[in-house]
Image 1 (spheres, helix red, strand yellow):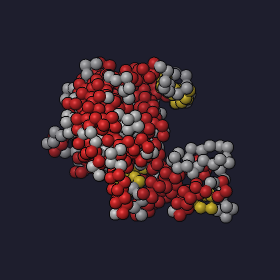
Image 2 (tube, rainbow, N blue to C red):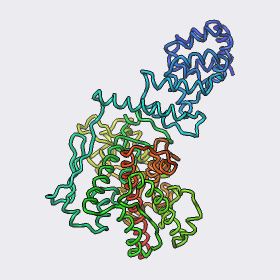
Image 3 (cartoon, rainbow, N blue to C red):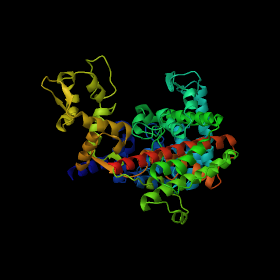
Image 4 (cartoon, helix red, strand yellow):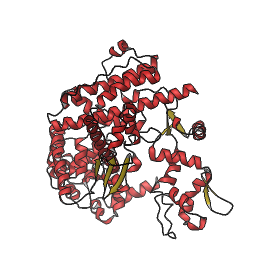
Length: 564
């Protein structure tokens, strides 16, 4: 109360020149200064022209004023005029609607004004490519609805900016080369040079193993579509992005995270599916026939599951027709699989009762405890300290070798308390208190239980564990961690990352920067560009391969569990 009284007295004695005091304060106190203007209504004693001059100060961004509702409303016309005068203020508008900033616009600043400002910004010389991407992918559920015409304007401008960047020689060269040499003993050879992946697949291996089971297994063991625990290998993972990328790439819940690592994996998997399908075509084998064989023959012979219906397009169909035919089959396959799990059989009449699409996240699994996820603050702290390159506890001035994180430091060197700075030891204390590391009898640091560290590492770098693919020892440990509410289980055909990857391709229900392939062909909004139809066709086949692998894995786990 006394502090408020003193502030009031100070303001009362400086009321006439209070606005001039702004230039005398440190920048970190600017918000406090404006807050005083707002709370004590000092702005009411300021003339509009004086306030305009105040807003034109170089050290006062307009966005700072927009944080204060009453002041913005009081100087409605003045703020509107300045807001509209500079097209770069469109960045502030976009931030407001993405909930990145709690801002208030002048009451007279209409939606038409907002859209006009954004449209002008797109053509401005100071346009930012990340803001363009936010305009293109602004979620439809926001208060501001950006018309398709402006989004297209932004899309074309973004393309120009990207070309300008790379024409100026900025960027990282990256690419994929895949070949199928005749004379190669190894099934696959992989090398990396100057950012280009060079993959050589033995053509002899393929020609000598043309049975469908082996041709399917090539997606797993040659092309690496999934890892050893049948997790999708080319989905986006947050920890693959660098710190620099996290600053420059737009990130939001409505945007699928596209790090450079993810884009490289996409390039690789696209090249693999395209090249492999064409090699098989030369050998008179169609991937579509392999898909029909999987559901019509393999599932019957291996798991006694019949009544799956799947119809692939003919080889004579155009790429557009192939896309239109295959996409509904994805939905039908997933509905049939759910019916099999729920009822023990595939009830085609029941499936035909519903014309709505099945959400990918609602596709079920035969297996309890299918996936393991982190679910605790304990995990967040432990994984950050052990594996993050931002933890700050693994950089040791006395050591010449530099490591990526504390885990790599621990497994590569013998460490004692004397190796670390005081502030590092304070941060590491949490690891000691939570029984993750300790000092052994010789004074060296060691992991208390390497199995716990292994589980943490799996969850940190892969974001999920496929429970049934681990040893009984690890499964037992995971179950104990679950009892302590440190991890959680989920039962679904696809992991959460895999669900996001499929949604990113099929629709825009979750990610506005998705490919939206299913909806484009379903609603007739696809392009007439034949090259785009070809790209979409191979993308759809890639998704179908992922679905087949995941269904087979789910059934194999269930079969092994029944045998046990």
